[in-house]
Length: 392
Image (cartoon, rainbow, N blue to C red; front, side, top):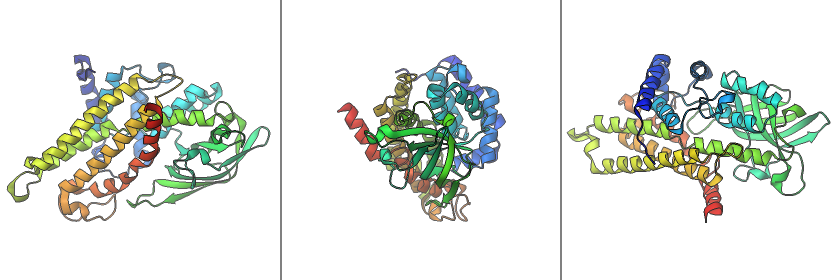
């Protein structure tokens, strides 16, 4: 696969960089670089700038607001934004529920929700995992009782990222007990402001609170908010999870982190010699670079094999998820080692360390938060089972 970019794409890269530098406040770029928390307003401002530029949904079909770019041009776009420390687009709308709606949703659902997703006016969260149904998602217990023209939904969802800020949830709920577990699951669109919805933040190991548990107590969901066919929710969920797992590869973010590691290694001079001259540091940087390049090629192949209406090949998406999340963790570990004892003084993910270089800022918080990278979106162990069943 040719990884070189054309003269036209080089010009586009400059255009993307100029746009990012002109539209991103330095405070936001610094937050992204150091893994700090962005406020909802900061995400919305950036995503609406992308929308006005026509760049918010590069992978969507043109008729729904996509760009019609080639795979190579999309790669240039995402990687250049990452190197400029631009915030990643919140995935629940554009990357996850958007493709489900324009592929399986009704005409009314597309008209109602797609514009709000593109304009960042409607925020979504994911209602899949439950206290006893994470990796074994098909064992979920949330129930949608049929009441004629509506469902009454009761149950509990957990690990719901941005649940406090979301306007809507795409939710899996059981509508039947007949046949296999997967057969009785339906895909619903649930208003987070509806009576009976209770959201409780969960404080995570990095002292953040972006993740929540959501209690659904007899929540009324109109039948018009059922996506596709009742009982086919498992199929739509697999389609969505393919998008999520491919996105978790986060090649652009890892590329930015690798460049940060190189800068720190060049600037840190214990004993008068730059860490970048240490053979062991060089080896770690080279190993990550090699794996990252291989992941980039794999990501392009996965995108090239994408089939409208079917989505990503499940095993390929799982491979991207496994390798991308493990690389993410290796990079946060490398940054901790490069910044040494200064990064160990942890006063909270979003606070500046009181000692040492600014290079250490955010390193520990980012490391702690990304311990979950090999769990969310389907644990590494489950992904390896998916790969084995498909390929062996």
